[in-house]
Image (cartoon, rainbow, N blue to C red):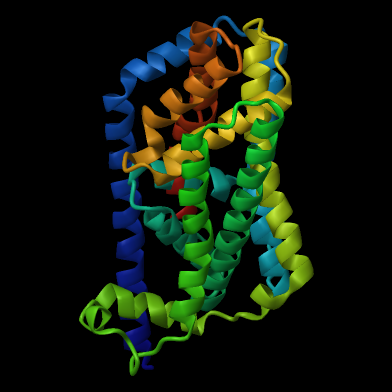
Length: 326
């Protein structure tokens, strides 16, 4: 390729990054402004939390970003890319902001992640392989957590027909998405189904998946480790909810909080509402109520959890996303 062509491609890529960064910031501001009432409730509840417990909750949440960054770090290191773990933690916060600001089934976060790693010198195929490994490990961990939820509900005698239906429906998603990735891997431009032939984005996605190095997806120790790291994220999020309930005076077993959190997460995943706004809260409060937690306390604890996991990272995420795409 000529130097003129390279310069042109570089200019186009720089424009895309600038446009994408601007779109993220605008969407984030709109989201913050439209949900200002929830932010006010979160801030009001924060005033009731003793600093030491708030610090514990913040450490738990920071640990979730370390776990996600560790998944990316191990994947990149396996492929010979030496990027410091601590430099990937801000990417986790910024990616979360990107997924929140532009709800798109994770596609906005994926575009951000690829753009940010490209800026660090990581080639597109390796970016895609890292994302695919993380996705497969995430749904494996999610499925393990869902099975653990059923076992715990059985022990608490709170297993109802709707929870079984919900878990089965989620299991189809947890198994179906990795299976769909493997199916797309086997496709090429010559054997595409008719309904995909004329879809440019589908062709680009299949090409990106086919170009990704698949060695790491066949590395059993790497898959097990990354699955456990993603499982740790679910445990840490549930532990944050447990801490918030403890702060509000409810001394409940973590083994009762974990299935409540996981069922609410599954409702959020399956539901059609972006970010699970409302659906997560209703499901979590309902399950905690079934565990004999007073409804007002369950609602306050759930709102504190959502504030720590959803709203609090928004402002730093906005800054980190803009910085990562410069």
